[in-house]
Image (cartoon, rainbow, N blue to C red; front, side):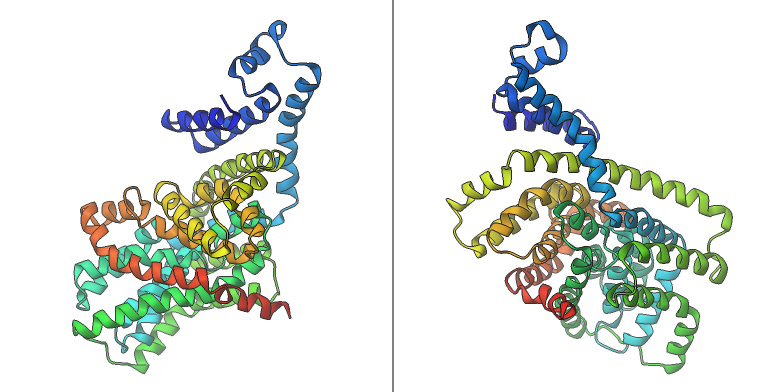
Length: 455
């Protein structure tokens, strides 16, 4: 049996047996590396492990196998130590946890609502911006639905939006913020694809605006045609919202200025985010008690530990991919059927939309980014542009049946049937797909600010 077929079978079998993803990736990667010099024979591998007297491999082959297996831990260590941005993952996650427990997101939405409430779909636009910000910090559209949905859903129904529109907007809006700093998926994509994270952060600004713009136009059209009442503009209400939420408003402003202004690295910005969140939520808003911080930190680190374990195994997988020159072989194969960069981008979009429907964004990024990035480079596609396409595709996949994670989260949280959530989300998914096509085939939307910042 060929090595790839055997390792793929082992990967699928472990997942079906209920093994954690990092175990499935690690075991199948180690198996692949060990079988390279054995000709792919399972019998020979079994003999190597359990019966040294019956080993049919020669000494050189055995040394090759053992050398590759020993290189796995070294590869993990070298890659993680050489990427200080990895420290940003647990810190940004902790900041998001603290904000989820506190009231920064609620106060921000209230500010946006009072400022834009007089416009058509003012509350809907406030929901889009608020969800985008919160998803950026939490790194999860599913968490955003649960954290923000309980606030926005009843508010939108009171304002005159029907249930279908409200459910669809809230379920979909979290997908936008995944492109905004401090986006954990973008950090992970940058880590495994060796792409500059700062450039990925900058590249996400215009695509986020495109997504919000497309969804906002649809929301305005709905608001006007359904005659949704608007809130009259009140300077007093705006000042009140700003007074109550000024510390919440400063949080994204300071974070964006620090990162985009070049004053801090993403790692330093993550430390600032935690300190700021603690000070504001504990001492200013007083929504969190000091005694709650250790428990929040422990819960966050358990979550981060799972992500990092998957990342370490993915780095081992990347080592195997590089060692066997799989991207070069896949590129040669794909070039037989796909001649142009446009054709490749279409194929990548289809693949990632399917993958996103079945895998969480972190796992999918860790598994597929090392495979797709080298192939994209061979077609002359900028890795920064690819990163934006990559993450947005996976987020749209979260909204796609049969296993779109966001659909099931919304169904359980709002206590609605899966079919009603799917139907409610469909118009918004179509709008996001239109935005995805614009971002995919107009690279300057992703690269313009990056090129401007480099001057």
